Length: 378
Image (cartoon, rainbow, N blue to C red; front, side, top):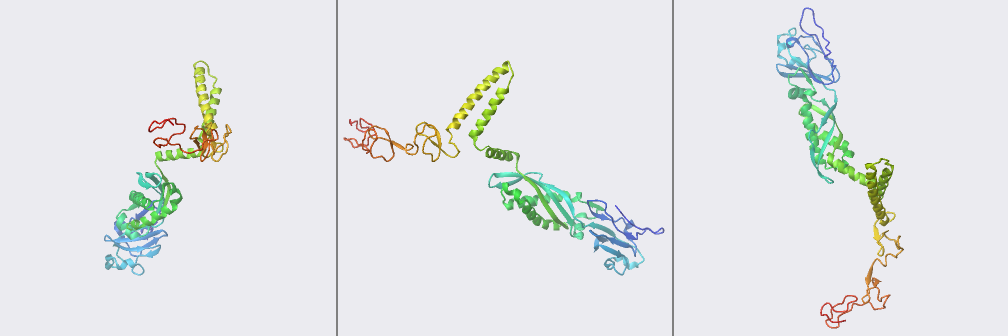
């Protein structure tokens, strides 16, 4: 510690009381006064981002903000509170002096040691992990010494970091569940979620005499299996037309097989693989030929079965007219295919009315020679 003090050659009493902090993590420092005796007329120097707390007979007597003070009966409010002064202003009194660091302590780490269970609209029940940083400062030096530091001569952030982290994780988990933000939308709401969590947790921090000045969420991640499923889903979206992708893969495989110049057993294996790849590619090409050009939904040709784009009027393979022949009914007499709704047959000229059995009046199938019900010859 950087301690500037002036000692009298004939006296043990400290005349200058100040603290220069050369650390980055000290919250409270108790000034080393010999036998806790402070002489009348001692100088107290409190710098910016500091506060000095006087403790007498186990009780906090007074709090001094930044400034320079002379310990005597004139300008120090503490004198009216300390019983030692009844012996006269030239007598020393016993007291402890604590310097409290009121600056912000930044870049403190937090993270979820275990996954946080959450109900998500897209994935159902998921487990999330998160981490980030936070900043604190001592807002109430008296409360901090009473509740946390106590009589500790040197209190640092590591002494309370474990408690603060558990408080932060508990508040964050509760805030995450209350927000009901979908897992896929969390990245766009880090700032809002961090602000909500900070405001929620500050009530708990006040009980320690602290203030949570910053709460930053750096990342919220899904389990590995969920991320793998999302990657596959994204890959399928990038691939697009699966049929064309299969053709491309088959062509690559044939190229690699053709470049294989190994002999012996490798040659036989290569030939076998080449035939298999050739068959696979032929199948892929056949499937591709049957797929409608330009993508979209497919309409099969009623004659050759080739797939055609929705709305096409003629088959791209055989030229068969589509639309009219796609919906046909058989002739009631000769069973020739007719356009749905036709009144006469184009082949035999028969009127398209349902035939009935002359004996039992049961409906006859097209081309029937005997009744299915009574066996009467038609």
